[in-house]
Amino acid sequence: MRENRLPFQLEACWKEKDMISGRVSDAMVMIMRTSGCCWANKGGCTMCGYRQASVSTVSEDDFNKQIDEALSKYKGEPFVKIYTSGSFLDENEIPAPIRERILKEFSRCERILFESRPEFVNEEVLSALPKTVTVALGLESSDPDVLSVSIKKGFTPEDSRRAGMLIKSASMAVRTYLMLKPPFFTESAAIEDTVRSAVFADEFSDEISINPLNVQRGTYAERLWRAGELRPPWIWSLAEVLKILSGTVNARLMSSPSGGGTMRGVHNCGNCDRKMLDGIERFSFSQDVKDLDVRCDCIKNWQTYLESEKILGTAADLERGFSDDLALGGAKDGGIRH
Ligand code: SF4
Ligand SMILES: [Zn+2]
Image (tube, rainbow, N blue to C red; front, side, top):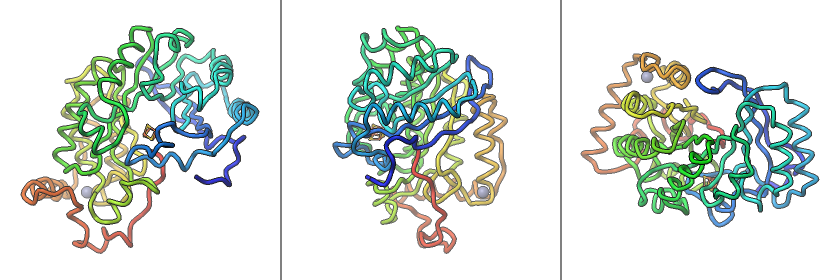
């Protein structure tokens, strides 16, 4: 935990594009400083470094100053996303009066999105929310063993499904996050798991956002990565997942990888990374698989990588040690957010 952070300041605030009812719209993103995710405070998920964005105590006065800061930057964007590095619906993290003020301040927005663990989603909480709300649920995987062993999520896929169905029956929207290639996964097993998980999530999701593993600081995933036991997924794998799912699920598919093109994030050979990530961004809006058509010779390396992992029966980073460019010492660094 970094105590040099000031509890009355936002962690970050920026503008970007997203979508409302099928059209591209301006969005403001605000990341609030809170005491952090209740689960992170008990050890947390294996890939989550969000504790770094938390401070030990944040008073209501601090929260109000953070909201004032956000309002000073707000230019009437119709879509506002409020991230807390935890659960917006957890009253121990965001006190009820603060939640009410935020919803009131942005009551003219067409769409408001925040994240929550499923245990905080219940009928009573939902009844107090406007219908413009989208709740983002971090399902990650539909496989209970993946959630408990690989991610240590602290809830089951059924918990997310229950929360998702409840949100849908309250006429609000759900954005579901899936983790592509959690620890201990080979590339091909990761593709299969994410495809299966998206089919599971489709029933209660308006949008499915694929988050390729991004190695965040101070996490168990980082320890594995430093030991050469883990390679973040190839961008080819992410594109493959999107191609397989396109036309299969009803939900809008999207991906906005943190640390993309770096050694800590989803990456290819280095030459095609930007082009592919741009294509994935375009696809997230258009849903047109043509946007995923990028050519680079490293697709052969990816195919060989998939085969080699199967033959060797390992999820370790097979590139490590084979190339100076890819060796850890020369790595470009990724950010902490996923
Ligand atoms: S990934 Fe989400 S649920 Fe897991 S520790 Fe981080 S903030 Fe909490
Ligand atoms: Zn390439």
